[in-house]
Length: 332
Image (tube, rainbow, N blue to C red; front, side, top):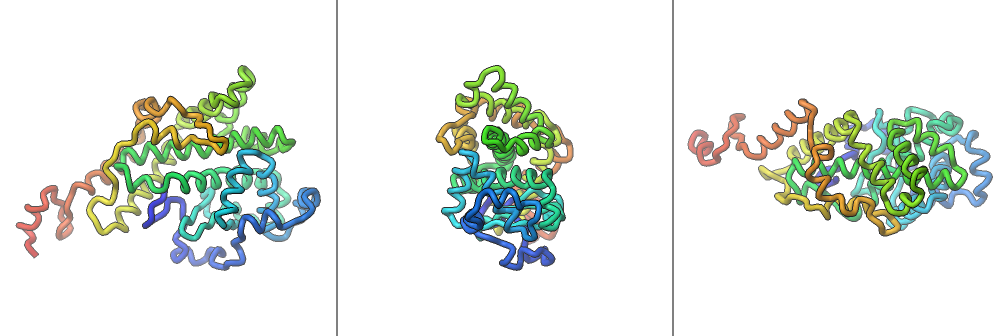
């Protein structure tokens, strides 16, 4: 989640001075891109001949608009005047600048013409856009976890949010498959989240009603946690974010004190159609080690250091657990 002081997945634009995002010409309002062309079919036929990023993004938005869920998230972001751009994010999927309302997607170091010609990277950009818009959707409704919850609970909630973004990308991909955009679905099957896509489609093959009951999406969500690399990568990003919150805070403990209840988890699964696919699973997610356990020793150590820093008083580069003792030893 994002806090008012620092944002997870957001870039420090003053530090990365080489990013072309500093040029406002490389950011466009979503609404403007969606209206960029009046001829919908020409846009799709000419996508391989594009010479600028705004045309690539316009193509992605029009593809996304074919999905009911994708269209709802896109419409909300457009109405809120969000902008979007394509930049080299050095391997990251996307970045969100909440204050400026800017979405940055990774261009995979490709120039517009190369991106337009590559079906693989075009579809990757569509999938990344789905996740980013879902993150914006969550940001509007739930704000910053660090304001309310302790670090160990933030870890679990960030996992839930990441798994939800991936699950929603599966949902939208399936909807696009039914709207004759099967290339996006095929890309998902071959992606790092292909196991989630297969679990989702498998549930629908056995029980078509699982699409509407939320059971298929809940199964895809659960599958996200069965990949250690996904979980560990999410934990690493969250721990880096918590470090940033600590570094920018003027108080000893900038985090909240609350422990999330089941509703705090279930509400994160609310979809644009007002259904919550994790309804009834919140208590299980907060208690089951599959969802909240941490097995990676490096991430464990990192989290323990953060928790220690929250309790220690640093005076003269010496950590104290007792503030009165610290004042007696270092009275000045």
